[in-house]
Image (cartoon, rainbow, N blue to C red):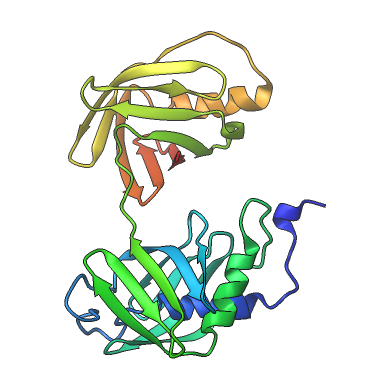
Length: 257
C-alpha cells in the first residue's frame, strides 16, 4: 500500500482546525487586516515556523503555511492542505468549519499536525505582528510562530520541473548576469540564451546533448523543448514557477531547497 496516499482515519478535521485557527489572524471583514503596528496579516503568505504547546516547542515541517484573504484561510500543514472561512475582530482570530485533505506523508512529521490540533482547537487566538513575523497565542499561553514567506527568486534558483513529471530529473536554472538558462530536460542537458523583461522570458534556440532515454522521459523532453526559441510568460508564487509559452505549453516547477 502506498502510504503517501493512505487516508488517515484519525480526526483530520480536528488537526486542521487548530492551525487554521492559529493561522486565522487576519482581517477578513474588509478592515485594515492589521494586528497592532506592523505588516497587515491579511493577503500575506505566512510560513509556519513552530508551535509551542504544554511548554514543548516543535519545529514546523517545510511547506507549512497559511494565507488569509477575502474571508478565507488557506494553506498547508506541511502534509495536508486546508481551507476555512475566517473572521478577525481586532487582534482576535476565529475560523469557521475547515476542509482539508487527509493524507499521511512519510517524509512529514504528522505528530506536528496533531499537536497543533490539541493546542488550538476551539480556542480564540490573539495575533501580534512584529515586522515580518506573526505570533498567535491561545488563552492558555500556547503559541504558533510564523514569518512572511518570500517568493523564491527566478534567477539563481534551481527549479525542478513537476509538470510534466519527468521523474524529478528535469530542472532549469536562470542566470541573470550571463543571460542564460541551463539544466536538464529529464534525459538530455540543455542551455540557451534567456532574456527576462516585464514579466516575460525570451528563450533562444536550445543546445542539447543527444542521449536516448526511456520513452516517457523523451515524451516529457519534447514538451519542455516547446518552451524554447520563443517568448514565455512567467509567474513565481512562493516556491512555484509557472512558465507558459505562446504555443500554449505550460510547465510548472518548484524551487529546490
